[in-house]
Amino acid sequence: MRVRVATTALGITAALLSLPACTTDTTGTKPDTAPSARTGKPTRAVEKAAVLSSATLETRLLDRSDLGSGYLRKPERPAQHDDVTVVGCPALNELGGDAATGGTPTFPRKAKTAFTYGGSSSEVSEELYSDSANKLSDGIERIFDAMTGCPTYQVVAGGTPIDMASQKLPAPRGLGDEQWSQLLTFSTGRRSTVVKQTAIRDGCLLLIVSGSPALVDRHLGKALAKATAAS
Image 1 (tube, one colour):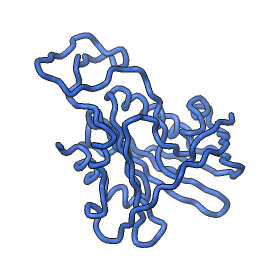
Image 2: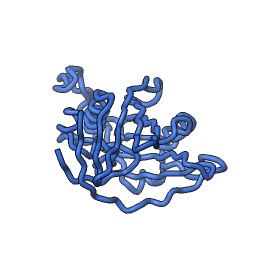
Image 3: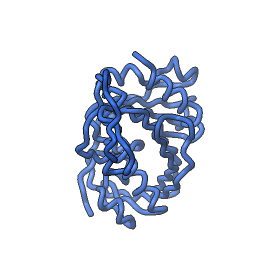
């Protein structure tokens, strides 16, 4: 399968589903006793959290003062659209090549940033998205399930073959409403890059922290605390 995608080193693509959005008005609402078609569990007629604008999400990203010394903001590069072929992973074929190569999610309300550390190749990136809880949950879960369901596969991006390996990791407990985590290894020739990626949904907000495993573990809690802080 050959598709046109914007390829980046970090991040994943979420599939958008047509489900009700969150609202800012919860006054006087009561739980809906009808079961959810997706989970079979009771749902609320109005969700507790509000969908946040991209401008608000920008203010909730980590900055250098949050991270400490040794971090430099990584300039955002223009997206490059390459032909991508996915080999050896039918589940990713169904979702499209963007999911396999780390393209950013397509939720309209978003903000992102990335940093290098200590003048080395170590990096950490943060992405924030806001939409209905169901959209965020269903979209990100489909992608993580597809990627971790294929332990090894290959991506040919712009004529360059990239050997991919994915491993599902235990999700961090006690953070947000839902959590996902995986370890990705990108190999080209004799060079390999290991990227840890952890996603947390808290209400109508989705946080994705990606990069060097040690840096992801170090800053995940701090990123969630700032992202979910009251304005």
